[in-house]
Structures are given as structure tokens and as C-alpha cells.
Amino acid sequence: MPNTYLEYMFKVQPVQPTVDILVAELSEAGFESFVENENGMLAYIQKKEWSDRVLSEIEILKNANFQISFSVNEIEQQNWNTTWERSFNPITVNKQCVVRAPFHEKQKVEFDIVIEPKMSFGTGHHETTHMMLQHILDHDFMGKSVLDMGSGTGVLAILAAMKGAAEIDAIDIDNWCYVNAKENVERNNCGQINVLEGDASLLTSTKKYDVIIANINRNMLLNDIPLYAKCLTKNGVVFLSGFYETDIALISKKCNEVALKFKKNLKKNNWVAVKYVF
Image 1 (cartoon, one colour):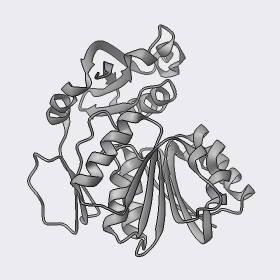
Image 2 (spheres, one colour):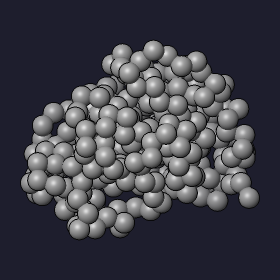
Image 3 (tube, one colour):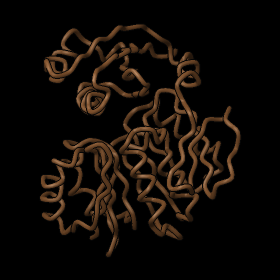
């Protein structure tokens, strides 16, 4: 039986950085998916995960410097495509990669990724996903083993596969993301991607990866970075995102504790995506 979701429609002023801050805080409160628009954004949370206290922890709603209003609707999962088609335009990354929906025309680029996200995060529109796609485009994945933690739609794993990765484990704790990623992996003919449902507890030090991709959030990364290090091959690479520029020092400190050294970072609207090497 489909899950019921609550759709919050936020109208904000100014749009930036309000939307970025809202996404970060709502993610921590249990919201699963976001669609930005010219007036603000839509945010989705499972009705069973909602309580009266959900928005009480969202600090930006209490900040007089931001004008934020919202309305709420109940929707079923099967109605997601209507929202998606109403809101989504293809994105292009570095003139090499296009992320589009099945109903968009194929474009002449090296990497054409077809994503139908349903309730999953990761279309390339959010700054963190866009920058992670940039990192993947700039890195050599040929023959590499890859881990994509918090894989969402599977878009990052799919691009890594298209760039020649030999084997990829894509892991997400949310069942809907797991199901959706499997659909998108099949849609893009990426047979080397193994989609798994779960969290970092699935990782074992006996299985090593050449590249680890994790676009999650700061607190989860701080908790899981030591596990990532145990799963890396010698000279392995980690790409991390889901946090702000002001968090780099904290993330780098945790990485340094497990011999992961800062290499470079990309920045977009205060969000960052950072490369570390083992």
C-alpha cells in the first residue's frame, strides 16, 4: 500500500540563502525530498514520520530576517510524477552530462542520465548533487570499485558507472529510495550497480572500495567517516557533500583522524563538495 506523504509548499523571501538553510534543517527533521521553484520550494515527509514538533526544531522559521510562509497537502506516492513533471527541467553539468526525465528529449552529450525520482533525493538540481556530479566527471573511474552512500535516486552511482566503474554498491536507508534507485539503474542499463537498502552498518572492512561517494549530512558524515576509511583501498578517494563551507574544518578534522587528507573542494551558494585522499 502506498505511503502517504505531507507536501509542504514554502514561499520564501529572499529565495537564497533561505531555501538552502531550509533544506538543511528540514533534512535533519525527517523530510526526505525537495523540489525548488522560483518562489521557494516543496518539501516532503512521510505522514507516519510527522508530529506536531517537527517544525518546532526549524530555527530559520523563528528568524525575523527571513519571510517564510507555507501550506500543507497530503499526497500519495503514485501522485509524485505529476508534481515532478510540473517542476522539473533537465540540468546540464560541465557541458558533458545531462540529467533529464524520461519525458524529455535526449540531448547530444557524453553522459545522458535518465532519472525518474519519485520521492527520492538527487536530481542534480540541488547544489550538493550538482557539485558531486562535477567531481565524478573530473575523476577517473575506469575499472574502479565504488561505494555510493545515501544514494537517493542513484544518479551519482549511475554517472560513475557510465564513466567506467567496474563495481558499485549504492546504499540508502530509505525503502522508497532503494526501490527508485533500482528502477533508475535498470533504466540507464547500469548492470554493475548493486543497490542495497540499509546504512553504514552494511559496510565491512573486508570489502574495499577505490572511491567512496557520500552526499548525506554533516552529522551522519561525522559519525560514518571512520567506517569509510576502513573500507578504502590504498590511495583511495572520498567525495563528501551535504554540508556548508563553515563545516569543512569540522569534517576535515574527523577525516584527518583516520588519515584522510583534504585535496580540494567545490562551492556553490555556501554548500560544498570536498575531495579527500587516503
